Image (cartoon, rainbow over all chains, first blue to last red; front, side, top):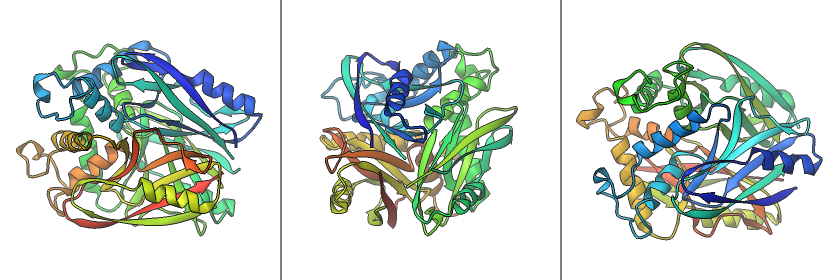
Length: 140
Length: 140
Length: 140
């Protein structure tokens, strides 16, 4: 089955779209029908399918998660034990737990069956730049 | 591979069960073993497998998500930027991000391998009626 | 397609790793490539892929979820209706809704394509001991 590892470079917390890379992988396979599984090989970033129209939606999503899980340096987060990797690290693991590590997207007519407004994003939860590996796997 | 789009009509926020439609799709395929992938083509509703016994569980789930993510008109939500589509829209995107856009369910003996108390639900986060598309894809 | 049910015994809330059992299942199948779907047949426990290095990460994850969703006996949780099965039951359903019921993990060279620090866990949300069933399904 076609399979590849996609590497994305991130520059701090945010949503990084890779819908086009996923579409290109499916297209290059020549398959008309199937199931694309997207899997992220990390525990401090995650995957999200969200609206790709109004960028304010992404701004608000980031703001919500920052309010729900503030940095470990925040007075409300004094209970956090795991601090060795910086104040953004444990909140990153928590945000990853609250979102998805894998997503399955059906394919028809050689295309991902995403809705009109759906974009596929890597959700980076760390502050510093990272190289992130995403596995794309196309099955029947 | 068998694949179909199931359309559900929703009438406001709530959990809409479609276990029977998913079972019927698997049954009609004639397959004994496989993997059913359920994928929702929207960003303001999502998928949930939850208890189908005591309806109070669904009541409490809805109450929890409404408390965690109140409408944009709530005094606590003044930070929300994306307001053009109504006070329920941005909270809907957030609730969708906190739940699942796709679920994979193994099939054996021609049936979904759900636990005794598991029901499959569309989780509608918008107030007004919507027509929602769910892709059902059965692979090996 | 290879498929099995893995049974895990839990002893209260916590993260129970089963990466080795999932690896052993894939290895025994003799398949070099494919997709492992992991599905939990319950609504008061869930699945999580998280860091398997520093155990403090798991401690903090549990603490976060307990703070976000306290027991029904907590003064803040007076709104909970479903109380018949104990103060840990409804919070368990909510925590399950916030995490994942199924995860798809691609396989290459006969191994799960997990990242270096990724472990696969059953996330038990109930206080008393339980026997939990997890379906492992390997497709192409």
